[in-house]
Length: 164
Image (tube, rainbow, N blue to C red; front, side):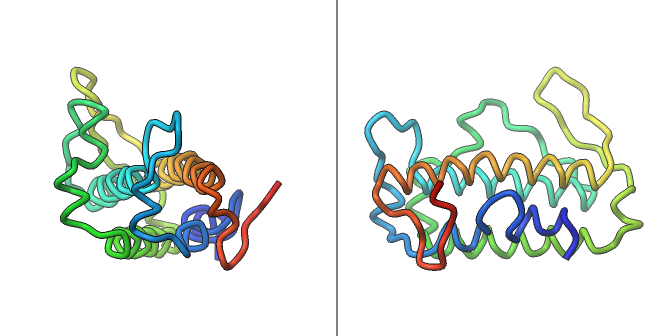
C-alpha cells in the first residue's frame, strides 16, 4: 500500500476511516454536542460530497463547484433518504475506488480540470494533487468526527484509535 492510498483508507496520519466510523448508532451521529456547528452525520456527508466530486473530476466530468458552503452539507431531506449505514458504505466504497486509482503511478501525473468557486476559473492539477487535496480535506473532517465522538463519550471505537 502506497502512502497516498494509506492516507485515503489506511492507518497513516490518523486512525483508519473505517475505525473512526464504527460502533456509532444512527441516533448518536445526529446528536449535536453543545457548541458544535455540525453533527457526525453532517461531517461524513460532507466528506462524501467532496470525495464524489473528486472522483468525477478525475473521470473527466467537470462537476460544478457548490454555490454556497451550505450546499456541500446535507439537508434534512438528504439525511432522511440516507441512513447512517448507507452513508458509511458510500464513503468506504468511494474511498476504496480512490485508493485503487492511486495504484496506477502513471495515471497520477495526468492533468485534470477542477472547477472553482465562481467567478474563479477552473484549476488544472494532476490526479495526484487532487488526491492529496482530498486526503488533507478528509483528515481535517475525520479529526472533527473524532472530536465529536469524544464530546459524545463515544471514543475510542471498538477497533481502537489514538486517545492522546
